[in-house]
Image (tube, rainbow, N blue to C red; front, side, top):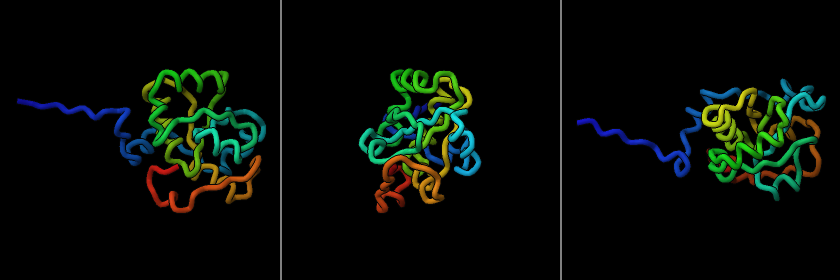
Length: 149
C-alpha cells in the first residue's frame, strides 16, 4: 500500500535550497546596466511600506506576501504580467529569499519566461552603492532568518 503525501503549496513554502536550484539568480553588478537602461522590468516583491521607504529606481511594487506565499495566486501572476509589459523581469526583496520564491512560482507554476531573482536583494544593491530612491532599511535581526525579508 502506497501513501502519497502532497505538500500544501500555499501554506508551507518549499525549502529555499530547492527553490534556488531551479531558478536563475543574478548578482547586482551583472544586471546594473540592464536595470539602468530599462531593458528589464524591475519588480519589488516587498510590502508597500518598505517599497515606499526606498527602492531601486524604476521598480514597480508587486507584493508577494510573507515568504512569497501570494506569488502562487493567479492575482499575483496577473499583476506581475501587467507590471512587466512583456519585458524580461528582475525580482527583488530585502535579501533575496522572497523574490527567489516568487521567481520560482512565476516560472514553474505560472509559466512566465525570462524571470530572474536578484541575489542579496535591495540590501546588497544598496551595500554596493548602486542607486536607490529613498532609504533602504533592513531589519538586521531578520537578516539571519531564512525567510524574513
